[in-house]
Length: 361
Figure 1 (cartoon, rainbow, N blue to C red):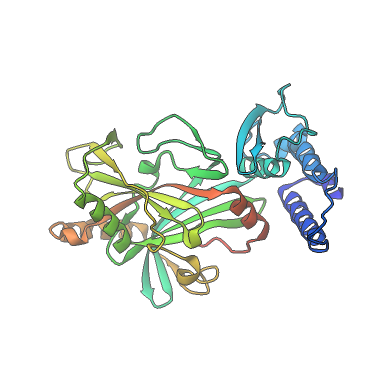
Figure 2: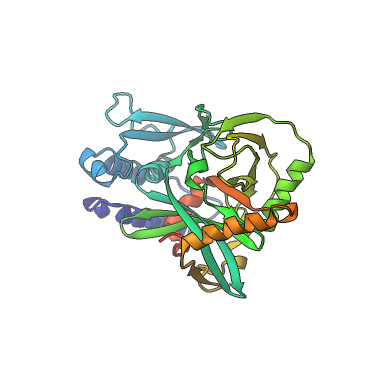
């Protein structure tokens, strides 16, 4: 495999793409009645893993996370896998000839966890014309992929393995997105992008309108649910917060937002109350990227940035004053807490997508 002479993310991804095409062509050319399984069928993946992840010099050069932990996907049965984690210099590292491990997924998982830089961007936008969106406020946050998750509602420390679902979590969501305030006729847009070398890939892109968020927020309030959790979030005032899980565009992954009523910072109370939203299918609320954004968004809408972020902030405060007495038009804080995607969808986008980032940059 000549690509091993020049190891970097670009050459590795290109080699994986060619290998998958080779396997597909080989299967297409064979009869359905008889498919010969080569004993060396997994050699590509073990060779790639050994050269790219076990070679300390090249691994340290490419490893964005600077992490010496290696993740192995163990085969339990055809529908379930579990993760084993070892340090790179551990004497207990699984043998490369042990096919109780899924070496293809092991390569994918370590690529995703170590070699790409992820940015989660949340933006408040407004549609100014039929095919124009204006970005009023935007914030980008560096995030990391993980095969496990924590309960952000209680800021818990316990990890729950979620593989093959990978989470891109914002632990400090209350601080990172504290300026994301959405009002009537506006929408919240979310983008998750991955970067390697000079290449950016879009992994998740979607939006949800103010009306949809408020509908969920009001629906939860009308149930009269009792308080189930409490926690303090900086100097934000006492208010109800709903954790709303939304199915992504085209059913691709999930995004979660903590939604609360926007209040001014000069109020006296500082504690905050949280209630949990039962999972529902919000697919109809989360607009599909091809219907809202068009192909790569630019083909459907022209994007304009707000000339002054300060003016956007002032608009939020002014609006809150004028709508304080109208509960039907309250402003909402929209804290983005995580995006969740399956590993195969991430790799598919890394190998195939050509969509440029829209909100980030």
